[in-house]
Length: 384
Image (cartoon, rainbow, N blue to C red; front, top):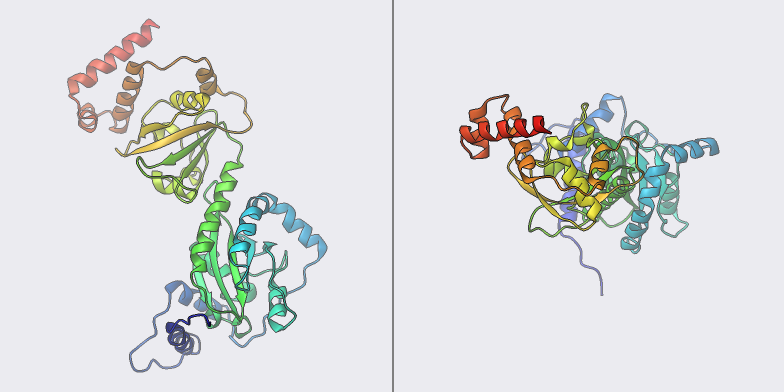
């Protein structure tokens, strides 16, 4: 029984060929007008043209010396360690397709490779050309590819055969997804590549999920005082949807995964200025540390936006000195309800730049109540 074929593939190949004639070779647009291709693909082609490249130029994959291989491996040790179990899992999923996994750094240099398909033919030679630690697969080196476009656009992509700029690389089909570190910067990408293989655009989805898995492992491996696991109330949590937030002893955010950045709509650790838990969550920091000490607490926490998230605080890795909030949690004392209430009101007034009426409206209480509770807080503080 033969495998089903996709009737759209010949049409797509013709569309790619026409796009190359129009955008790369500058042929006049005919009939129905310009061929539609992905904007990121057109941008990559244009960058190659602007660099003075021609599609028929030979592409050489330069040999890599042992010292360069060692340097690349050492510089990307944490990334490779986090990616290894994910690459093994992905390799099982694609074992029967003649695709294989390639991991690169942020410059497009290969730092690790999954198991390679068997064979001794020309396709295997093309596989071995790129499946080497230290080889440069960046856009300046090999033109348009899933690696170069994923890194340039910082988005997942799928490229098939003629969508590569150079004719020499038109034997490849590849899916790519960028990788972001705990500080939110692009640190590399995961590529799933095949040589002279059937088009599998669904691999783009696999590449994206696998990239998120690697990012999560990097966050989980990060040393911190407190790690917050975030989810939306009533929504089942999974590896792909769970937010992860790393917090230091002072309550500053030191790392986050993509889900947390999206859920909290904040740049988080990528910000030039330190972001504190108090800027995100409308409850005292010591309550999070205390819940982590208990070990099994799941809190429904209000955000300053008015939304609520479920937070499961867990103790992080190695302890750093000066852990004042943690020390407070270890005493076992519970914050008084009125202290929590006062802290929330003070925060609302601060956010309203001292406008008590605006703060009262945001909190849904009267101005008199705001004044009374703030005065009570000052009185109890002076009495202490």
